[in-house]
Each structure stands twice: as structure tokens, then as C-alpha cells.
Image 1 (cartoon, rainbow, N blue to C red):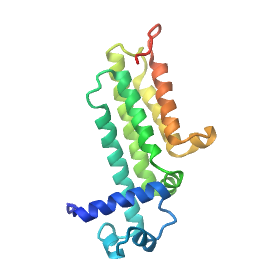
Image 2: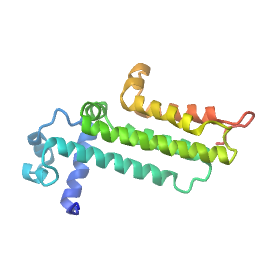
Image 3: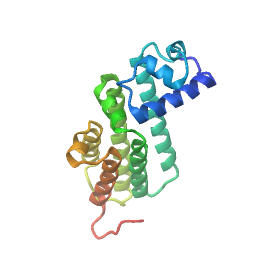
Image 4: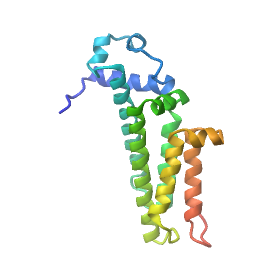
Length: 196
């Protein structure tokens, strides 16, 4: 069982997350981090046993917080179109906080990449549930929800790995916005006009 964080440790993790999101973490040593945050290395070691473990902890914290904020954003939205749009807009907004250096470092380090991939799979599962709801409610045309969700998942994965964003010359946030538009337009019932 993990010990509860002290207030100082929680504040330190918040500052670490902000530092990593802005600059990435691959180039930083523990000495660099301690100097930037005006704390001792032993304070950092109380959070994690190594720089790598610290990166995993901070990246996990960022994605967990992002998922919670996105879920809060869609709570109470009954219109499934608005739920999908808001969910993907939330993902875009959360990723817009992350610098290219952070995304590259997350992708280059297998343990943090695994965290990102878990989040991408979870996002695909949420989208699948939204699509199934929309089909059942006759908001969306009859589609193979699992297939659409898997295609969305592959797009999310290619956004996450940087393949799509490099090829298209866009940010992760812009790619998520476009994915939302693609999904909602593709799911629209024939003759229906999109709801605002």
C-alpha cells in the first residue's frame, strides 16, 4: 500500500509535472531537477528511487489527472454527440499543455510510453461506449461500433506515437480536434443535421 503524500510532496509533484510538461524530462538529471525545484535529491528520492521511476510517476500522474478532468468535463452531458465532441476536445486541451519535448520523451522511454498507450486504449474504449450509446439511441446511423472505435483507437495511437502529427504537420491537440470532427461527421445519420 502506498503512503499518503505530504502536502510538500504533493506540491513538489505538481511543480515537477509542470516542469516536465514544459521541457520534457529526458535531458534532465536528478541534480538538475533538484536545483530547478530548490529541493534536495533526498527529497526527490522520497518520491521515487531513481530519475526513471520519477518520470514514470509524474507521467502517470499527468495522464490520471487528465483523464479525471476529461471525465468531469463530460459528466452530465446527455447528448452523445456533445459527449464525444467534449471528450475529444478535452483530450486535445489536455495534450495542448504538453510540449513536443515532453511527448517525445514519453514516447522514447518504454515505461512512460506504456502509460500513454494504456491511456490511448482507455480512450478508444470510452469512444466505443459513446458510439454504442449513439447507435442504440438512434442518434448515430447503424455502424459497427467496435470497428469505429478500433479505427479511432488506431488514430489515437498514431497521434500518440507522433506518426500522424509528423505526417500532417499538426500538434496532438489539433489531431484530436480533427478526430472529433471526423467521427461525428462519419456517424451522422443520413439527412440529419449536426446538433450544435
